[in-house]
Length: 51
Length: 315
Picture 1 (cartoon, each protein chain N blue to C red):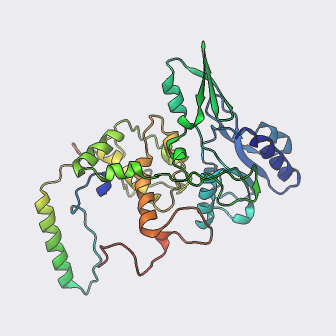
Picture 2 (tube, each protein chain N blue to C red):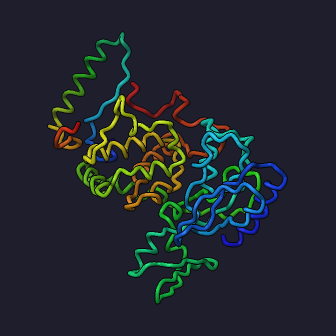
Protein backbone atom coordinates (compact mmCIF):
# COMPACT_ATOMS: atom_id res chain seq x y z
CA UNK A 1 0.00 0.00 0.00
CA UNK A 2 2.87 2.33 0.80
CA UNK A 3 4.32 1.50 -2.57
CA UNK A 4 1.33 3.05 -4.30
CA UNK A 5 1.38 6.18 -2.23
CA UNK A 6 -0.41 5.59 1.08
CA UNK A 7 1.71 7.43 3.67
CA UNK A 8 3.79 5.23 5.96
CA UNK A 9 1.97 4.97 9.28
CA UNK A 10 -1.55 5.48 7.97
CA UNK A 11 -2.17 1.79 7.58
CA UNK A 12 -1.30 -0.35 10.57
CA UNK A 13 -1.28 -4.03 11.34
CA UNK A 14 -0.70 -5.69 14.65
CA UNK A 15 -1.09 -9.08 16.23
CA UNK A 16 -2.85 -8.83 19.57
CA UNK A 17 -4.29 -11.66 21.59
CA UNK A 18 -7.64 -11.16 23.33
CA UNK A 19 -5.69 -11.53 26.57
CA UNK A 20 -3.35 -8.65 25.77
CA UNK A 21 -5.58 -5.75 26.72
CA UNK A 22 -2.73 -3.39 27.65
CA UNK A 23 -0.98 -4.07 24.33
CA UNK A 24 -4.25 -3.27 22.56
CA UNK A 25 -4.47 0.07 24.33
CA UNK A 26 -0.83 0.88 23.55
CA UNK A 27 -1.21 0.02 19.89
CA UNK A 28 -4.43 2.03 19.51
CA UNK A 29 -2.83 5.04 21.21
CA UNK A 30 0.21 4.75 18.98
CA UNK A 31 -1.87 4.45 15.82
CA UNK A 32 -4.08 7.39 16.76
CA UNK A 33 -1.06 9.58 17.35
CA UNK A 34 0.66 8.69 14.09
CA UNK A 35 -2.47 9.12 12.02
CA UNK A 36 -3.32 12.46 13.69
CA UNK A 37 0.20 13.63 12.94
CA UNK A 38 -0.27 12.73 9.27
CA UNK A 39 -3.42 14.83 9.06
CA UNK A 40 -6.60 14.13 7.12
CA UNK A 41 -6.52 11.51 4.40
CA UNK A 42 -6.95 13.08 0.99
CA UNK A 43 -6.39 10.05 -1.17
CA UNK A 44 -8.58 7.09 -1.77
CA UNK A 45 -11.81 8.94 -1.14
CA UNK A 46 -14.73 8.71 -3.46
CA UNK A 47 -15.83 12.09 -4.74
CA UNK A 48 -19.51 11.22 -4.63
CA UNK A 49 -21.28 8.33 -3.08
CA UNK A 50 -21.96 5.71 -5.69
CA UNK A 51 -24.50 3.04 -5.07
CA UNK B 1 13.22 -19.36 -32.46
CA UNK B 2 11.70 -19.99 -35.89
CA UNK B 3 13.57 -23.26 -36.18
CA UNK B 4 11.72 -24.67 -33.17
CA UNK B 5 8.47 -25.17 -34.99
CA UNK B 6 9.41 -28.33 -36.89
CA UNK B 7 10.40 -30.01 -33.67
CA UNK B 8 7.26 -28.75 -31.92
CA UNK B 9 5.10 -30.16 -34.70
CA UNK B 10 6.99 -33.44 -34.68
CA UNK B 11 6.64 -33.88 -30.90
CA UNK B 12 2.96 -32.85 -30.99
CA UNK B 13 2.17 -35.23 -33.82
CA UNK B 14 3.97 -38.09 -32.10
CA UNK B 15 2.22 -37.53 -28.76
CA UNK B 16 -1.18 -37.44 -30.46
CA UNK B 17 -0.36 -40.44 -32.66
CA UNK B 18 0.73 -42.52 -29.71
CA UNK B 19 -2.34 -41.48 -27.78
CA UNK B 20 -0.24 -40.09 -24.94
CA UNK B 21 -2.28 -36.91 -24.95
CA UNK B 22 -5.83 -36.01 -25.92
CA UNK B 23 -4.81 -32.60 -27.13
CA UNK B 24 -1.96 -30.20 -27.55
CA UNK B 25 -2.26 -26.60 -26.44
CA UNK B 26 -0.11 -24.36 -28.58
CA UNK B 27 -0.25 -21.39 -30.90
CA UNK B 28 -1.63 -20.90 -34.36
CA UNK B 29 -1.22 -17.94 -36.63
CA UNK B 30 -3.48 -15.09 -35.68
CA UNK B 31 -5.66 -13.14 -38.07
CA UNK B 32 -3.62 -10.01 -37.41
CA UNK B 33 0.15 -9.58 -37.47
CA UNK B 34 1.94 -10.06 -34.14
CA UNK B 35 -1.15 -11.69 -32.62
CA UNK B 36 -0.71 -15.43 -32.50
CA UNK B 37 -3.70 -17.20 -31.01
CA UNK B 38 -3.77 -20.08 -28.58
CA UNK B 39 -5.14 -23.22 -30.17
CA UNK B 40 -6.16 -26.71 -29.14
CA UNK B 41 -4.93 -29.44 -31.47
CA UNK B 42 -6.82 -32.71 -31.12
CA UNK B 43 -5.75 -34.79 -34.14
CA UNK B 44 -2.25 -35.53 -35.50
CA UNK B 45 -3.14 -33.88 -38.82
CA UNK B 46 -4.02 -30.60 -37.17
CA UNK B 47 -0.53 -30.38 -35.65
CA UNK B 48 0.65 -28.76 -38.88
CA UNK B 49 -1.21 -25.56 -38.02
CA UNK B 50 0.95 -24.96 -34.94
CA UNK B 51 3.32 -22.02 -35.15
CA UNK B 52 6.16 -20.67 -33.06
CA UNK B 53 7.76 -17.25 -33.37
CA UNK B 54 8.28 -14.15 -31.27
CA UNK B 55 4.56 -13.40 -31.04
CA UNK B 56 3.64 -16.22 -28.67
CA UNK B 57 3.51 -14.07 -25.55
CA UNK B 58 0.18 -15.33 -24.27
CA UNK B 59 0.61 -17.59 -21.24
CA UNK B 60 -0.76 -21.02 -22.11
CA UNK B 61 -0.93 -22.15 -18.49
CA UNK B 62 -4.13 -20.12 -18.45
CA UNK B 63 -5.86 -22.82 -20.52
CA UNK B 64 -4.99 -25.71 -18.20
CA UNK B 65 -7.06 -24.77 -15.18
CA UNK B 66 -9.12 -27.71 -13.88
CA UNK B 67 -8.78 -29.69 -17.10
CA UNK B 68 -9.19 -33.43 -16.77
CA UNK B 69 -7.85 -34.65 -20.14
CA UNK B 70 -4.31 -35.66 -20.91
CA UNK B 71 -2.75 -32.51 -22.28
CA UNK B 72 0.43 -31.72 -24.10
CA UNK B 73 1.26 -28.09 -23.52
CA UNK B 74 3.86 -25.96 -25.18
CA UNK B 75 5.68 -24.00 -22.53
CA UNK B 76 8.30 -21.30 -22.63
CA UNK B 77 10.07 -20.32 -19.41
CA UNK B 78 7.26 -18.28 -17.89
CA UNK B 79 4.51 -20.68 -19.02
CA UNK B 80 6.35 -23.54 -17.36
CA UNK B 81 6.63 -21.61 -14.12
CA UNK B 82 2.91 -20.96 -14.18
CA UNK B 83 2.31 -24.64 -14.88
CA UNK B 84 4.38 -25.44 -11.78
CA UNK B 85 2.24 -22.97 -9.83
CA UNK B 86 -0.91 -24.66 -11.18
CA UNK B 87 0.40 -28.05 -10.05
CA UNK B 88 1.26 -26.71 -6.57
CA UNK B 89 -2.21 -25.17 -6.30
CA UNK B 90 -3.93 -28.38 -7.45
CA UNK B 91 -5.38 -26.79 -10.55
CA UNK B 92 -3.93 -29.48 -12.81
CA UNK B 93 -2.45 -32.91 -12.21
CA UNK B 94 1.20 -33.38 -13.14
CA UNK B 95 0.53 -36.88 -14.50
CA UNK B 96 -2.03 -35.49 -16.95
CA UNK B 97 0.53 -33.19 -18.53
CA UNK B 98 3.22 -33.63 -21.12
CA UNK B 99 5.13 -30.38 -21.08
CA UNK B 100 6.86 -29.51 -24.32
CA UNK B 101 9.50 -27.06 -23.17
CA UNK B 102 10.55 -24.26 -25.46
CA UNK B 103 13.68 -22.35 -24.48
CA UNK B 104 12.67 -18.77 -25.15
CA UNK B 105 14.60 -15.80 -26.43
CA UNK B 106 11.94 -13.27 -25.62
CA UNK B 107 8.71 -12.15 -27.19
CA UNK B 108 8.31 -8.92 -29.10
CA UNK B 109 6.15 -6.05 -27.98
CA UNK B 110 3.64 -5.32 -30.73
CA UNK B 111 2.97 -1.85 -29.31
CA UNK B 112 6.59 -0.86 -29.74
CA UNK B 113 6.42 -1.84 -33.40
CA UNK B 114 3.05 -0.23 -34.10
CA UNK B 115 4.22 2.99 -32.45
CA UNK B 116 7.19 3.23 -34.82
CA UNK B 117 5.10 3.56 -37.95
CA UNK B 118 2.34 5.97 -38.90
CA UNK B 119 0.77 3.53 -41.30
CA UNK B 120 -0.75 0.20 -40.42
CA UNK B 121 1.69 -2.67 -39.98
CA UNK B 122 0.46 -5.46 -42.21
CA UNK B 123 3.11 -8.12 -41.99
CA UNK B 124 5.80 -8.96 -39.47
CA UNK B 125 8.29 -11.73 -40.02
CA UNK B 126 11.57 -12.84 -38.50
CA UNK B 127 15.01 -13.73 -39.70
CA UNK B 128 17.31 -14.78 -36.91
CA UNK B 129 17.59 -11.78 -34.62
CA UNK B 130 15.98 -9.41 -37.09
CA UNK B 131 12.33 -8.48 -37.37
CA UNK B 132 11.04 -7.44 -40.76
CA UNK B 133 8.06 -5.14 -40.69
CA UNK B 134 6.01 -4.54 -43.82
CA UNK B 135 3.11 -2.25 -44.52
CA UNK B 136 1.59 -0.37 -47.41
CA UNK B 137 4.62 1.16 -49.14
CA UNK B 138 7.25 0.47 -46.50
CA UNK B 139 9.49 -2.31 -45.36
CA UNK B 140 11.98 -2.12 -42.55
CA UNK B 141 14.41 -4.46 -40.86
CA UNK B 142 14.63 -3.98 -37.09
CA UNK B 143 16.68 -5.52 -34.32
CA UNK B 144 14.65 -7.90 -32.17
CA UNK B 145 16.55 -7.01 -29.00
CA UNK B 146 15.17 -3.44 -29.21
CA UNK B 147 11.60 -4.67 -29.51
CA UNK B 148 11.33 -7.15 -26.66
CA UNK B 149 8.47 -7.01 -24.21
CA UNK B 150 9.63 -5.22 -21.10
CA UNK B 151 9.40 -8.35 -18.95
CA UNK B 152 11.29 -10.40 -21.54
CA UNK B 153 14.19 -7.96 -21.62
CA UNK B 154 14.77 -8.52 -17.89
CA UNK B 155 13.87 -12.23 -17.86
CA UNK B 156 16.25 -14.59 -16.08
CA UNK B 157 14.23 -17.76 -16.58
CA UNK B 158 14.08 -18.24 -20.31
CA UNK B 159 14.42 -21.99 -20.09
CA UNK B 160 11.43 -24.00 -18.93
CA UNK B 161 11.53 -24.93 -15.23
CA UNK B 162 9.72 -28.21 -15.78
CA UNK B 163 9.44 -30.17 -19.02
CA UNK B 164 9.10 -33.65 -20.47
CA UNK B 165 10.22 -32.91 -23.99
CA UNK B 166 12.38 -30.12 -25.34
CA UNK B 167 11.81 -28.38 -28.67
CA UNK B 168 15.38 -27.07 -28.80
CA UNK B 169 18.60 -27.04 -26.75
CA UNK B 170 18.45 -24.88 -23.65
CA UNK B 171 19.44 -21.27 -24.19
CA UNK B 172 21.86 -19.26 -22.13
CA UNK B 173 20.13 -17.28 -19.39
CA UNK B 174 20.60 -13.52 -19.33
CA UNK B 175 23.10 -12.48 -16.69
CA UNK B 176 23.79 -9.24 -14.83
CA UNK B 177 20.21 -8.17 -15.26
CA UNK B 178 18.84 -5.49 -12.96
CA UNK B 179 15.36 -6.90 -12.80
CA UNK B 180 13.83 -4.43 -10.40
CA UNK B 181 15.26 -1.07 -11.49
CA UNK B 182 11.77 0.23 -12.30
CA UNK B 183 10.35 -0.85 -8.93
CA UNK B 184 13.23 0.81 -7.08
CA UNK B 185 12.60 4.01 -8.98
CA UNK B 186 9.06 4.13 -7.58
CA UNK B 187 10.29 3.16 -4.11
CA UNK B 188 12.48 6.25 -3.91
CA UNK B 189 9.53 8.59 -4.59
CA UNK B 190 7.69 10.57 -1.93
CA UNK B 191 4.22 9.21 -0.98
CA UNK B 192 2.45 11.94 -2.96
CA UNK B 193 4.58 11.28 -6.03
CA UNK B 194 3.83 7.60 -5.75
CA UNK B 195 0.15 8.35 -5.52
CA UNK B 196 0.28 10.53 -8.62
CA UNK B 197 2.37 7.99 -10.48
CA UNK B 198 -0.25 5.28 -10.01
CA UNK B 199 -3.11 7.71 -10.67
CA UNK B 200 -1.49 8.57 -13.95
CA UNK B 201 -0.74 4.92 -14.71
CA UNK B 202 -4.37 3.89 -14.25
CA UNK B 203 -5.95 6.94 -15.86
CA UNK B 204 -6.86 5.01 -19.01
CA UNK B 205 -8.22 1.90 -17.28
CA UNK B 206 -11.59 0.78 -18.66
CA UNK B 207 -12.02 -2.01 -16.14
CA UNK B 208 -12.45 -4.48 -18.95
CA UNK B 209 -10.60 -7.06 -16.83
CA UNK B 210 -8.55 -8.25 -19.80
CA UNK B 211 -5.51 -8.34 -17.49
CA UNK B 212 -7.34 -10.66 -15.14
CA UNK B 213 -8.64 -12.88 -17.92
CA UNK B 214 -5.21 -13.27 -19.50
CA UNK B 215 -3.62 -14.13 -16.17
CA UNK B 216 -3.13 -17.83 -15.42
CA UNK B 217 -3.31 -17.07 -11.70
CA UNK B 218 -6.79 -15.58 -11.93
CA UNK B 219 -8.83 -18.74 -11.97
CA UNK B 220 -11.28 -18.14 -9.09
CA UNK B 221 -14.79 -19.34 -10.05
CA UNK B 222 -16.12 -15.97 -8.95
CA UNK B 223 -13.63 -13.15 -8.98
CA UNK B 224 -13.86 -10.63 -6.14
CA UNK B 225 -14.76 -7.92 -8.62
CA UNK B 226 -17.72 -9.88 -9.98
CA UNK B 227 -19.09 -10.83 -6.59
CA UNK B 228 -22.21 -8.81 -5.79
CA UNK B 229 -23.09 -10.18 -2.37
CA UNK B 230 -21.03 -9.18 -0.54
CA UNK B 231 -19.70 -6.55 -2.88
CA UNK B 232 -15.99 -6.27 -2.10
CA UNK B 233 -15.23 -3.47 -4.51
CA UNK B 234 -17.30 -0.80 -6.21
CA UNK B 235 -18.07 -1.44 -9.85
CA UNK B 236 -17.80 2.16 -10.97
CA UNK B 237 -15.15 4.00 -12.95
CA UNK B 238 -14.34 6.01 -9.85
CA UNK B 239 -10.59 6.09 -9.45
CA UNK B 240 -10.73 4.54 -5.97
CA UNK B 241 -12.61 1.56 -7.41
CA UNK B 242 -10.18 1.23 -10.30
CA UNK B 243 -7.24 1.36 -7.97
CA UNK B 244 -8.81 -1.09 -5.53
CA UNK B 245 -9.28 -3.57 -8.34
CA UNK B 246 -5.67 -3.29 -9.44
CA UNK B 247 -3.94 -3.48 -6.10
CA UNK B 248 -6.20 -6.25 -4.80
CA UNK B 249 -5.62 -8.27 -7.93
CA UNK B 250 -1.88 -7.77 -7.47
CA UNK B 251 -2.10 -8.98 -3.87
CA UNK B 252 -3.89 -12.11 -5.04
CA UNK B 253 -0.86 -12.78 -7.23
CA UNK B 254 1.71 -12.24 -4.47
CA UNK B 255 4.23 -15.06 -4.39
CA UNK B 256 2.59 -16.56 -7.47
CA UNK B 257 3.29 -14.07 -10.22
CA UNK B 258 6.05 -15.07 -12.63
CA UNK B 259 6.12 -11.70 -14.41
CA UNK B 260 5.07 -13.39 -17.65
CA UNK B 261 3.63 -10.11 -18.90
CA UNK B 262 0.30 -11.58 -20.04
CA UNK B 263 -1.64 -8.86 -18.18
CA UNK B 264 0.28 -6.03 -19.75
CA UNK B 265 0.12 -7.64 -23.16
CA UNK B 266 -3.65 -8.08 -22.93
CA UNK B 267 -4.40 -4.53 -21.82
CA UNK B 268 -6.22 -2.72 -24.63
CA UNK B 269 -4.97 0.65 -23.47
CA UNK B 270 -1.41 -0.44 -22.75
CA UNK B 271 -1.31 0.07 -18.98
CA UNK B 272 1.78 -1.36 -17.35
CA UNK B 273 -0.23 -3.51 -14.94
CA UNK B 274 3.02 -5.12 -13.89
CA UNK B 275 3.90 -2.01 -11.87
CA UNK B 276 1.72 -3.51 -9.13
CA UNK B 277 2.62 -7.19 -9.36
CA UNK B 278 6.33 -6.58 -9.76
CA UNK B 279 6.63 -4.83 -6.42
CA UNK B 280 5.14 -7.89 -4.72
CA UNK B 281 7.36 -10.17 -6.75
CA UNK B 282 10.38 -8.17 -5.60
CA UNK B 283 9.24 -8.25 -1.96
CA UNK B 284 8.74 -12.01 -2.11
CA UNK B 285 12.21 -12.43 -3.48
CA UNK B 286 13.89 -10.10 -1.01
CA UNK B 287 12.01 -11.18 2.10
CA UNK B 288 11.54 -14.88 1.48
CA UNK B 289 14.06 -15.66 -1.26
CA UNK B 290 11.12 -16.87 -3.28
CA UNK B 291 10.68 -17.00 -7.01
CA UNK B 292 7.39 -18.49 -8.14
CA UNK B 293 7.18 -21.64 -10.20
CA UNK B 294 10.74 -22.87 -9.98
CA UNK B 295 10.10 -26.16 -8.20
CA UNK B 296 7.09 -28.38 -7.54
CA UNK B 297 8.68 -29.54 -4.28
CA UNK B 298 8.70 -26.25 -2.42
CA UNK B 299 5.68 -24.64 -0.77
CA UNK B 300 5.02 -20.97 -1.54
CA UNK B 301 5.73 -18.33 1.13
CA UNK B 302 2.06 -17.60 1.76
CA UNK B 303 1.28 -21.09 3.03
CA UNK B 304 4.34 -21.63 5.18
CA UNK B 305 5.60 -19.98 8.32
CA UNK B 306 9.14 -19.65 9.51
CA UNK B 307 10.15 -18.36 12.94
CA UNK B 308 12.46 -15.86 11.26
CA UNK B 309 9.58 -14.22 9.39
CA UNK B 310 10.70 -10.69 8.48
CA UNK B 311 7.25 -9.13 9.17
CA UNK B 312 7.86 -6.62 11.94
CA UNK B 313 4.19 -6.02 12.66
CA UNK B 314 3.90 -9.40 14.39
CA UNK B 315 5.48 -8.26 17.60
